[in-house]
Image (tube, rainbow, N blue to C red; front, side, top):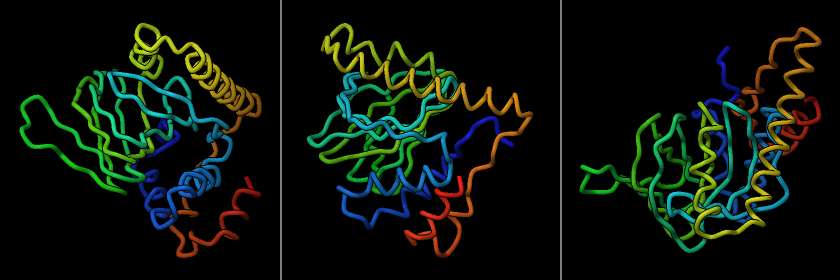
Length: 220
């Protein structure tokens, strides 16, 4: 079994399942499927908050945070661009709506990704990123997540000074890390292995059935 809970290709498959839904419903449907597949490892936070990092201003809704993985919805209604950062973690951005463009220092034409496509930023690499109008992403990162916090919070601390959203970001991250710690301790005390995700829910021909997913959530 992988050391990680999530696999990028499975997350991409989940996003693709719901691309025909109206944008206003798409996030709820994706989150519900994530919760059905991964159980308590996905806990969508009730509020969207601002994220400013590398010059990119997005709104963000947190789904999972642990020392080795994180997952958020993020995006913009008006468009934004900036530096990806160079990290000790690898990042995967799956386009939920709109267009994401990226480029490297020696790249003279942008790489454009549309709904359902996935961008990958390997560890210790960087790019320029442009999120077009109404570009929304499911972002997943894995590796040294704690090392990302200086980048993720630097613009907020030293530029926008939005202490309200700084507090909310730290509260969400702490709450979800504590939840993952409790799951790990409970599993260790019971001498159980980590429960495998319900990947059958996204591979069955009936995966689009609301009743099918509802039954799966109730069984978790």
